[in-house]
Length: 373
Ligand SMILES: *Cc1c(COP(=O)(O)O)cnc(C)c1O
Image (cartoon, rainbow, N blue to C red):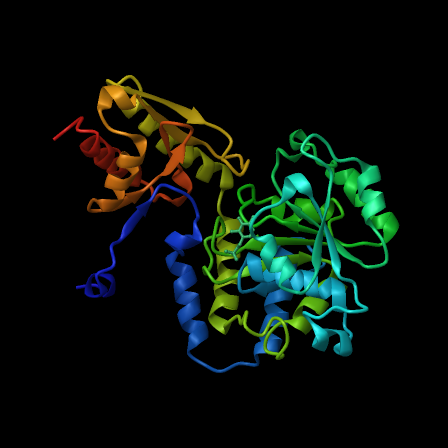
């Protein structure tokens, strides 16, 4: 009996996304082995963080890098870095910011729930723009001497949502001396985002370690400007300040480095081709079956260059609602998690499926839809 069986925890086939509530991603064996090796001795944790950071910076063509305990922690540390720099007196005062920089600018149309992590430092979010558009004027007017940073939640389709184009945003920010932080947690693939975002002039780009990179679930990356990343480390563990509850173990640091090396060594085109094969299999299996239409959707919901299979149900003909289908898939054995798509569709995302698991998903879906005994 495995440990999950012993605890009565159902294993789940994830055709949904790199969701934290499902465990994020599954680490390659080499990552686990490196983490075991890392776990077998004591080391100087500050020295390890520095060396791993140097190595990751070199691999990702950045000035500096830092392993955080996730992208949400990266948002906290990145914001704290912009407020405190390397000033011990300021560091000690967080999250009480009287007299310190206490505002972070965000697009009204660029909000996501993760901005709580930014506010954890004590800052107030200042929204710019409307549902229709945001102008450079809006940004210019919002910046003043209390502005700590400009935060942007990255989506590749952002210009179509009335946000200021990134190059213009960076130009204004640079002219006014305000750092730009980009949350790109789930923006891999493409792997080029590890350098392309900072090459554009963004000061810090933040990623989850346990999503597309398939590193430890409790790891993340801060990439970018050396002085700011030093200030992240200054606020981070093991020092007993804002980042202390966001501890990163030696195992996670090493696991993150090895996961990154593996990702960079693989052929991303081949990975995307595999996703295409899995999606094609699902579309070919379901499209045209009674009560079903299926197609390849592209890009992903987060705008990444990845396909997924969308299967739309004629709920009346099938005498079953989409939500019932999703529920029954989760109740089955093996449990299968898929995402809802549109009003009556489900989507299958290959990113979190192993090669071949698309067949298990198809089989379970057929059973639930009573297309096969
Ligand atoms: C997942 C996610 C986060 C949080 O990342 P963790 O690594 O789970 O802490 C932050 N921002 C966005 C946009 C995300 O998708």
